[in-house]
Amino acid sequence: MSRFRGLQACRILATCALLLAVAGTARAEWLSPGPLAKDHKALDVEASCERCHVPGGRVSQDRCLGCHTEVAIPLQQKRGFHTKLITSSGKACESCHSDHKGRDYPLIRWTPPAAFDHGKETGFELAGAHAAANCGSCHKDRPRYMGLKTACASCHEDVHRGQLGADCANCHTVTAFRPASGFSHARTDFPLVGKHEDVACASCHSTRPDGAVAYALKGFKRCSSCHEDPHRGRTSLSPCDACHQTTGWHDTRGLPPAHSPAGWPLVGKHQSVACRDCHGSELAAKVSRECVSCHADPHAGRFGKDCEACHDESGWSLRGKSLTRFDHDRTRYPLQGRHKRVDCRSCHKGSGSYAATWRGLAFDRCDRCHSRYHEGPLTTVPSATACERCHTVQGFDPSTFTDADHARATFALTGSHLAVPCASCHRRDPPSAPTPLDLAASRCADCHEDPHKGQFDKDMGDKGCVVCHSTAGWGSGGFDHDQTRLPLRGVHAEAACESCHPGAPARPYADAPHTCEGCHADKHLGQFRTEPARTCDACHGFDAWPITAFDHAERAGWPLEGKHQPLACDACHGEVKLPDGRTATQYRLGYRECRDCHANPHAGGRR
Image (tube, rainbow, N blue to C red; front, side, top):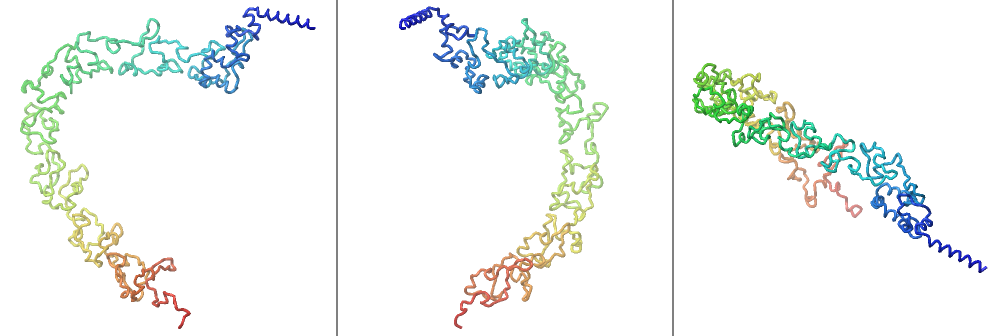
């Protein structure tokens, strides 16, 4: 038995020796559970086992991620599809990507589901034209899906050949490559304005030999880079924009230095003159500054060559403000006030010879030029044509007719009448009619409505309203209330009239009450109307309602003595409520005995 065991041990040792003699590759294949997939083929040697496995253990996820950084980095940042998948399932890498099943075994066995949200799962949202693209359009190395770049140039050809940089989103959107909706020529070094806005892109940006459109142009700030010189170099004015504008070739608002404010500025009628009219078709002719070098002298030299003494560039015609430099003060009639703004031909209307037009005009009276405005007699003016008595050349309005002048009229202005506008009394009817000056009004009632509705017609007599009022103001005048049945004293003198004389439109004055109870309510509710009856003024005065000094012995027949003296009134005179709900202070008590107020302290004692 021991011999048999010895032989068996020798065989085992021989077998082990044989295994140790086998080559390393064969030994690895003999120990491995199967060949690795072709993507892991380089690891299919004994020395590479620990690249994936921990000693004596299974596959380590950390070792997987050590090689597959395209998965490791999103996992560390907690983003991407693998992060969501591992978080929801808790599975490791080998749960989905098993190996040792042969060279042709696919390590990735996954097809995107129809409801796969590319934006949420990968961080790259499919929008615009990308949303309609097939997965294989971008992911051509399937079943592998990871590792693609998101830059436009990683998928799309740069048709600009690097001219405009790598950030395609500056001009284009994912919706469509054309048109480049994000592009704005205003952000370039050459904003398009004026006529340039209507030029087709290809007119400036031609196609290069390599097929790309030339966008990065040079020398574009010079007009001659695109436009032919119509002057063919015969004018020294440069650059082109010294005269011309992008709004159009014929827009020459930009004048050359010779026509600047420091040179000979083009103003007035000269602004509309074409350049060639003065400088010739080649724009090379020199021009003299004398007016007669371009304009014929209609005065035939009578006033010399200094045309600017009377005319300016606003226009030669005499129908406007063309003679602004003519000094009319050198004539017999200097122009003042509003005459300075009158058109020359408004006065110089002659249609014959020069002398008939400009000389011999009569100007001794206003009516030589102005028609008569006022109608009827003017009693304060010595002559109906002496307009300067009330008006000046500064303007017809306001009139210089003074208050002193009005005092000589039939109605002198005093008090508040001095502040009344003339048109309030001198009204035009209709508004286009001349202003009436001689008015027949002389009494207050001619202009003012009687607010008293005739209550005082008999009292006023011929004097009218001035019996009580004056022109200084409606509230001022000679009215004396002491002449009435109720002279005003104390607080009555401070009361407003309408406090006693209410009503509208005419306040009653003649029938106004003149007793206390006519205006004031009886706070005592009739206590003092009985015998002995007393009127309000028996206790109260006109200065104020509270009684300041009341002689209780004289007025009430009950002297306040001893302890009674410091008592407050309401200690004896309390509030009582009447059957109708009203309350009042009870002053007439109806009793005078001590027992009416005080309890008998001797009750039950010795008699």
